[in-house]
Structure formats: structure tokens, C-alpha cells
Image (cartoon, rainbow, N blue to C red):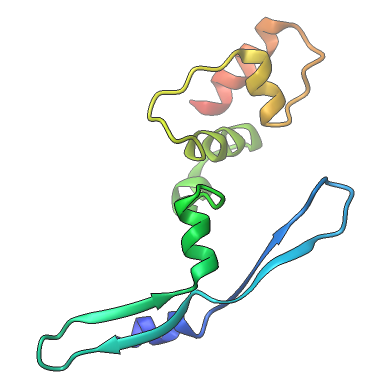
Amino acid sequence: MKSLRRLSKAHITIEKRISRSNDAQAEMDGCIINSITKNKDSKKMVLELNPYLLSSFRNWLITPIDIRVRSELRGDISKALYRFYEGQRLNCYTISIMKLSNVINMCCDGKIFCLREKNQAGYA
């Protein structure tokens, strides 16, 4: 209960940018948990979550990423690949090497074998 109370005091802001050059436009500003109800007899708890966050997770607008796993990855390419693949809905995802390089913002003006080598080295 102590942890839930602490989490209910956590304040977050989710920003949406139309492009990298635009200023951030605040989408949501508030708490993750709106209320906590605990029944002493049945010991059941009911959490009322922020409706914006709930619908965002449901509609895949926010991707949950394991920060510990991501922090243990070496290199920017591996972190970008992890973030990309975690954002996909399917467990198996097929994409061309050029499209993948473009998606993770890796320079695509090199030769194909160089891109493939960088991607394989970054994800290993």
C-alpha cells in the first residue's frame, strides 16, 4: 500500500511533437493513479488509473520499455533496435535493412553490407 501511495503521488507529463524541430505540445499532465480503494474485509484493492494513460497503452500509443534491459545494452544502435522492436505488436517482425536503418535514424547513404554489419553488431 505504501508503494501504491508513493506511485499515486508521481506526476508525469507526456508530450507530443509533430516534428523534431517543433516545440513540444503537452498531451497529458497528471498522476498515474487517480485513487486507491482498499476493502479491509476482502483485502481487495481497486485502482483508478489515469484514463488518458490507460487508453494510450490500450491503443499502443505508449510503449512500455524495460529500462534495466535497455541500460545494459551497449551502443546507440542496440538501444534504438531494442526500442523499435519492443514497439512492435507482433513477436516476429520482418523489415528490410534499408527501412530498419531509416526507422532507427541510422545513416543510410552507405553500402548495404555496411548497414547490415552495423545492425548485426549493434543488436548482438
